[in-house]
Length: 182
Image: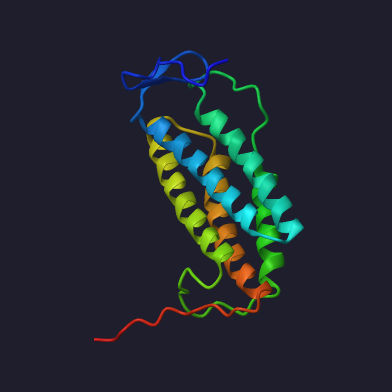
């Protein structure tokens, strides 16, 4: 099988199910950003040493692939895969709660830096928020299941907490934002 098909050379692409859309369609923006997020999480994984965090992030990557496939499927067609459900958001909440047990209370905004893995987590958080915005835009024209909206909202919280947790396990304090007064 060749990697190039030439079917998209004029600015359209095919969804699973056969429908073709312009490459700037909001649906493609949504699943393209989910793909970018998945790659960003791969960078976090490759920068970490903690095997448990790597396993958690790999699980998240699998969920992202499922949502990407769902978003790349023609509306009304069955993608033929199991999608994350409410239990997935609960899983992320539990992981957030576990990490927060060892973190100092958050009293300020924090700068997204301090350790390479933490910075990668902040970049992934930003990409996650963009994916969420693209999915919400798609949801406004093609209603989606509520679980997908919850998933991306919770995932950005997870990635923020992960960045702080990575700093903690490396004994690096959060760097608070120090706004200048007028």
